[in-house]
Image (cartoon, rainbow, N blue to C red; front, side, top):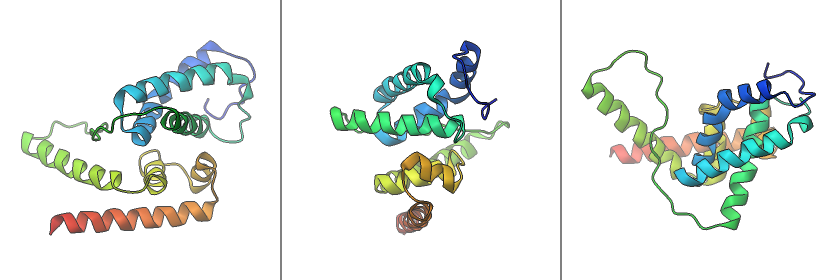
Length: 174
Protein backbone atom coordinates (compact mmCIF):
# COMPACT_ATOMS: atom_id res chain seq x y z
CA UNK A 1 0.00 0.00 0.00
CA UNK A 2 2.89 2.37 0.70
CA UNK A 3 4.01 2.54 -2.93
CA UNK A 4 0.49 2.76 -4.32
CA UNK A 5 -0.26 5.88 -6.32
CA UNK A 6 -2.54 8.05 -4.27
CA UNK A 7 -5.16 9.58 -6.52
CA UNK A 8 -8.06 10.49 -4.28
CA UNK A 9 -8.22 11.58 -0.68
CA UNK A 10 -9.14 8.22 0.79
CA UNK A 11 -9.60 8.47 4.56
CA UNK A 12 -8.76 4.79 5.03
CA UNK A 13 -5.41 5.27 3.30
CA UNK A 14 -4.65 8.39 5.33
CA UNK A 15 -5.60 6.58 8.55
CA UNK A 16 -3.30 3.72 7.56
CA UNK A 17 -0.39 6.08 6.84
CA UNK A 18 -0.88 7.89 10.15
CA UNK A 19 -1.07 4.66 12.15
CA UNK A 20 1.90 3.19 10.31
CA UNK A 21 4.20 6.23 10.43
CA UNK A 22 3.24 8.60 13.25
CA UNK A 23 5.96 7.24 15.54
CA UNK A 24 8.61 7.67 12.82
CA UNK A 25 7.46 11.25 12.23
CA UNK A 26 7.49 12.03 15.95
CA UNK A 27 10.89 10.38 16.51
CA UNK A 28 12.49 12.18 13.58
CA UNK A 29 11.13 15.54 14.69
CA UNK A 30 12.43 14.80 18.20
CA UNK A 31 15.88 13.97 16.84
CA UNK A 32 15.94 17.35 15.11
CA UNK A 33 14.42 19.45 17.92
CA UNK A 34 15.23 17.46 21.07
CA UNK A 35 11.93 18.75 22.51
CA UNK A 36 8.99 16.44 23.26
CA UNK A 37 6.30 19.12 23.20
CA UNK A 38 7.62 20.63 20.00
CA UNK A 39 7.76 17.15 18.46
CA UNK A 40 4.09 16.67 19.33
CA UNK A 41 3.23 19.95 17.58
CA UNK A 42 5.38 19.14 14.56
CA UNK A 43 3.88 15.66 14.22
CA UNK A 44 0.39 17.11 14.26
CA UNK A 45 1.32 19.75 11.70
CA UNK A 46 2.98 17.18 9.43
CA UNK A 47 -0.15 15.06 9.28
CA UNK A 48 -2.33 18.12 8.69
CA UNK A 49 -0.06 18.97 5.75
CA UNK A 50 -0.25 15.36 4.53
CA UNK A 51 -4.04 15.45 4.68
CA UNK A 52 -4.16 18.74 2.75
CA UNK A 53 -1.51 17.69 0.20
CA UNK A 54 -2.51 14.03 -0.14
CA UNK A 55 -3.20 14.38 -3.86
CA UNK A 56 0.19 15.99 -4.50
CA UNK A 57 2.09 12.80 -3.60
CA UNK A 58 3.76 11.92 -6.90
CA UNK A 59 4.90 8.39 -6.04
CA UNK A 60 8.50 9.31 -6.92
CA UNK A 61 9.53 7.95 -3.53
CA UNK A 62 7.98 5.92 -0.75
CA UNK A 63 5.34 7.47 1.48
CA UNK A 64 7.80 7.14 4.37
CA UNK A 65 10.45 9.16 2.54
CA UNK A 66 7.84 11.80 1.64
CA UNK A 67 6.71 12.00 5.29
CA UNK A 68 10.26 12.28 6.62
CA UNK A 69 11.03 15.06 4.15
CA UNK A 70 7.91 16.97 5.26
CA UNK A 71 8.88 16.32 8.88
CA UNK A 72 12.41 17.63 8.37
CA UNK A 73 11.23 20.78 6.62
CA UNK A 74 8.53 21.43 9.22
CA UNK A 75 10.94 20.88 12.12
CA UNK A 76 13.59 23.14 10.62
CA UNK A 77 10.97 25.83 10.02
CA UNK A 78 9.91 25.55 13.67
CA UNK A 79 13.52 25.89 14.80
CA UNK A 80 14.02 28.96 12.64
CA UNK A 81 10.85 30.63 13.86
CA UNK A 82 10.79 29.88 17.57
CA UNK A 83 13.03 29.42 20.58
CA UNK A 84 13.04 26.01 22.19
CA UNK A 85 14.83 24.46 25.14
CA UNK A 86 17.11 21.48 24.61
CA UNK A 87 16.10 18.39 26.50
CA UNK A 88 18.29 15.31 26.72
CA UNK A 89 17.28 12.45 24.47
CA UNK A 90 15.26 9.67 26.03
CA UNK A 91 15.61 6.20 24.65
CA UNK A 92 12.48 5.84 22.55
CA UNK A 93 12.63 2.44 21.01
CA UNK A 94 13.03 -1.08 22.21
CA UNK A 95 12.20 -4.22 20.29
CA UNK A 96 12.91 -6.98 22.80
CA UNK A 97 10.24 -9.68 22.83
CA UNK A 98 11.79 -11.45 25.77
CA UNK A 99 11.80 -10.23 29.34
CA UNK A 100 15.44 -9.54 30.17
CA UNK A 101 16.71 -9.36 33.73
CA UNK A 102 16.78 -6.02 35.51
CA UNK A 103 20.58 -5.99 35.25
CA UNK A 104 20.46 -6.65 31.50
CA UNK A 105 17.82 -3.95 31.05
CA UNK A 106 19.94 -1.48 32.99
CA UNK A 107 23.11 -2.27 31.01
CA UNK A 108 21.27 -2.07 27.68
CA UNK A 109 19.69 1.24 28.66
CA UNK A 110 23.06 2.63 29.76
CA UNK A 111 24.68 1.49 26.51
CA UNK A 112 21.85 2.94 24.44
CA UNK A 113 22.07 6.23 26.35
CA UNK A 114 25.83 6.39 25.74
CA UNK A 115 25.31 5.80 22.02
CA UNK A 116 22.54 8.41 21.81
CA UNK A 117 24.61 10.89 23.81
CA UNK A 118 27.44 10.46 21.31
CA UNK A 119 25.03 10.79 18.37
CA UNK A 120 23.65 14.00 19.85
CA UNK A 121 27.17 15.45 19.97
CA UNK A 122 27.37 15.25 16.18
CA UNK A 123 26.63 18.26 14.00
CA UNK A 124 23.03 18.14 12.76
CA UNK A 125 23.99 17.27 9.18
CA UNK A 126 25.88 14.17 10.37
CA UNK A 127 23.32 13.26 13.02
CA UNK A 128 20.44 13.32 10.51
CA UNK A 129 22.20 11.10 8.00
CA UNK A 130 23.13 8.56 10.68
CA UNK A 131 19.58 8.43 12.07
CA UNK A 132 17.97 8.09 8.63
CA UNK A 133 20.36 5.24 7.84
CA UNK A 134 20.42 3.37 11.16
CA UNK A 135 16.97 4.01 12.62
CA UNK A 136 14.80 4.42 9.53
CA UNK A 137 16.85 2.14 7.26
CA UNK A 138 16.50 4.45 4.27
CA UNK A 139 18.62 3.85 1.18
CA UNK A 140 21.28 6.37 0.15
CA UNK A 141 18.89 7.57 -2.59
CA UNK A 142 16.07 8.10 -0.09
CA UNK A 143 18.34 9.88 2.38
CA UNK A 144 19.67 12.13 -0.39
CA UNK A 145 16.13 12.97 -1.47
CA UNK A 146 14.96 13.60 2.09
CA UNK A 147 17.87 15.93 2.86
CA UNK A 148 18.12 17.50 -0.60
CA UNK A 149 21.77 16.53 -1.09
CA UNK A 150 23.71 14.25 -3.43
CA UNK A 151 24.31 10.55 -2.77
CA UNK A 152 28.04 11.27 -2.48
CA UNK A 153 27.32 13.80 0.25
CA UNK A 154 25.19 11.22 2.07
CA UNK A 155 27.99 8.66 1.92
CA UNK A 156 30.66 11.06 3.15
CA UNK A 157 28.47 12.42 5.96
CA UNK A 158 27.56 8.89 7.02
CA UNK A 159 31.22 7.84 7.04
CA UNK A 160 32.18 10.89 9.10
CA UNK A 161 29.26 10.39 11.49
CA UNK A 162 30.14 6.75 12.15
CA UNK A 163 33.81 7.59 12.65
CA UNK A 164 32.96 10.43 15.04
CA UNK A 165 30.55 8.29 17.10
CA UNK A 166 33.20 5.57 17.36
CA UNK A 167 35.77 8.13 18.47
CA UNK A 168 33.43 9.66 21.06
CA UNK A 169 32.54 6.23 22.48
CA UNK A 170 36.22 5.23 22.60
CA UNK A 171 37.13 8.47 24.40
CA UNK A 172 34.33 7.93 26.92
CA UNK A 173 35.67 4.46 27.76
CA UNK A 174 39.05 5.90 28.77
